[in-house]
Image (cartoon, rainbow, N blue to C red; front, side):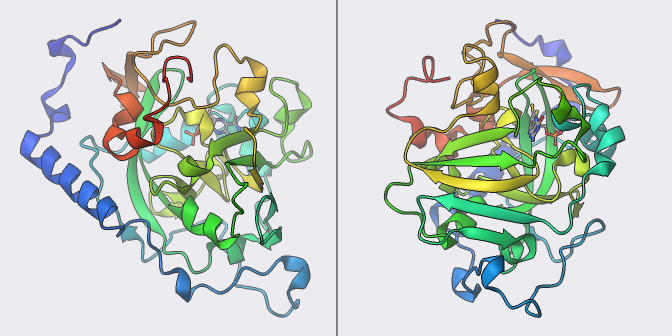
Length: 332
Ligand code: MTE
């Protein structure tokens, strides 16, 4: 295991303990009081599938770019400064646009994000194909500063904009058979040159247990840095699951499926020994080819520091209770 030497820690990286505790207490209290998870769902209309909507009855299109206003702040417990906008939007993984880190920023302009629909299917009372605008409407957009840890042992801090996925999923009224949720990315070789190559099984797919999907930290994301998501970061709609490795955070979602059995996921299908279903950030569970005990922090001249990785990426207080009966070493 790699141990961080004290001289590697910059003074600016150290948050006074009192500040850190205060933030943590704020987040804990907010979660306990249900302040964070309870969007005012009563203010939302029923979701109507597109084929049942009158054509004149369409919402204003969600903007394709530009600033998002009236964002609700989130009580973040992250002590370090956010990674720069340039790094967050210039160093990406989005294999549909190429496998190098700079490919998505160069190539993803061909993705057409408007109009956009999401098809909901499986174990839920309300299913169908819904307009992006109807999905977003009625949810309060929040700015949440999250740590984001990639399986390749680098990390960043990002001010994402979105709302809790669970608030949306409840609107589809999942049945008691809905034990898991699967997500799919668009799969269109005209817009996505990378899907012409079999580097992964397309469409890119991911999955969560229903408890993980409903957890108030799981964010359905439409923006970053106060702006609409750039295409390379998964516009117009992506997932952010901050206690899991970054590949669980699937981009450009077009399909959501409620399921009674554990869903297939692209990385698990590609290499089950290296990528499990859960993929919780865990410094004690090495990837077969490298340690996960530390991470390089994206910043400055690409990577500025190596710091110890935290269990559940630092969100253990909020999410560890999801896994009390699970052996994290065998269920990685
Ligand atoms: N979603 C799709 N559809 N295709 C991808 O290649 N890469 C994943 C995840 N979501 C990926 C994806 C990986 S490996 C990571 S680390 C994150 O997106 C990267 O998100 P970012 O580019 O916004 O930092």
